[in-house]
Image (cartoon, rainbow, N blue to C red; front, side, top):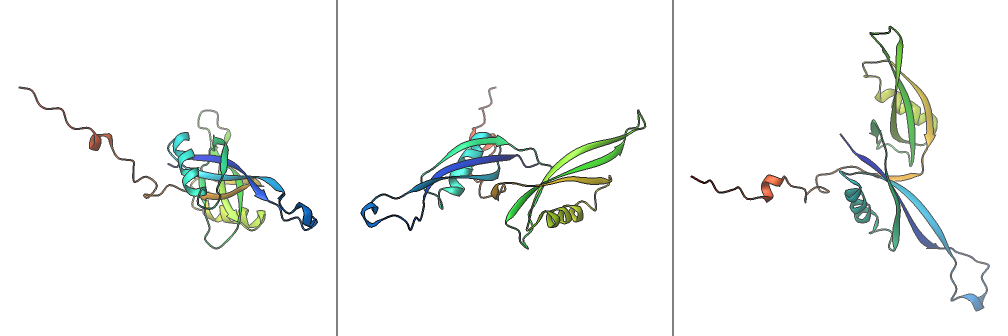
Amino acid sequence: MPNWFLGKIRYQQPVDDSNVGSRNEEFIKQKTVTEAYLVDAVSYTDAETRLYQEIAANTPDFEITNISRMKLADVFHNEEGGETWFKVKAMFITDDEKTGKQKKTPSVMLVNAETPKQAYERVEVSLKTALDPFEITDVNTTKILDIFPYTEEAARNLRPLSELVSPEPETV
């Protein structure tokens, strides 16, 4: 089961200001940019390491300002498009056998799409095979720019402890 962390970074980006006169050419205006990324990691430390690995190639001289756990039931990445990531909340409806009343259990998912309507439709199609009936209650735009799921390559340094520890010699 994925363990998702939301990481926020901040860096300075030069601003193209055509109004700057020729005498101020050595002065370059900078603006502060904040970006959010979602990382599948085993811990906060792993999330921080993966953020540095993924982002350092494209964004030199940045700082990680926040890492927080994000509880998600699922992440639906659609290859057909959608630069925007939407957070979709669905309520699964079950019958409580003890009280005889309906119980609604919230579930939060992330999906990439072009519009909120497309995000709604993509989640609806993905959940059609669910055993319990559901109702989608919220579709919200997020500031997440990219998602870094777990890959075998990311975990190549993770090995079982048994491979690292030599067995104890048997005593007779």
